Image (cartoon, rainbow, N blue to C red; front, side, top):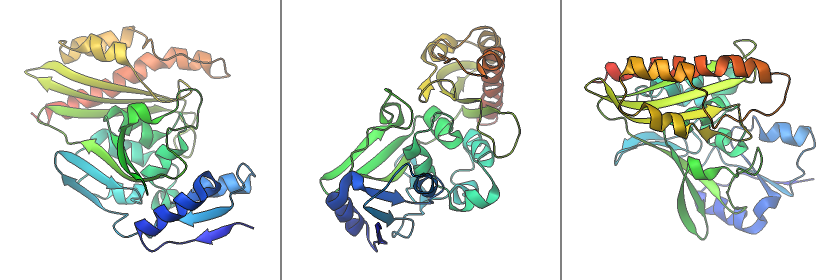
Length: 285
């Protein structure tokens, strides 16, 4: 029988992590953690609920960043005026699971699960987000691009005594837009087969910066780095033509039942995400 803890403060939570380390299972929304227990994938010595921690549901803008506290739920994010300008992120949130799951599920949990086909995580990856990890030893900020252990799926660089307390997203600037495209067998409650997230900047009709996230195509989320470089200096129309006709080289599909399907639709999905981001950017000029 596991010990169960519901700490009243962050300091108390970090103390428990320092005591138990990887033998402590953190439960935030619990949508993944509880399933892992039921399926026998984990047998923790202790379980710690953290959703009740003070200020753990805050969403605010400060210092050039959108800040999302570790306990903020998908529903809270969808209803937040601070998140609303991030069109691609709002759309990604709307595709997550079911309304009942979105009430309790969290972006922090989505990131920590490190699934390669995670909608919210993929869009945050495209947004060049970072995470704040805290322990009794101190605090560190890790870019999502460095957060995942690329040796396999479902692994991160978090230490056993660390708690993800905050997500930081660089604030949108004039001329920036975001876009998201998801392809799956059915619309609701299905794991995506392709996820594309895009963040870009338009200056006088020309793309001056670009970030592309590829989800559900590799063992972990990856950036479409070659695509990002290629479209710099292109007009929106030229960029859409380019991505529609050029396979993102970082998408290294493993052999599965859906491999051929993914090969046939990835470029179209990237193009659709670009169209949305360009349209969004045009409205922010």
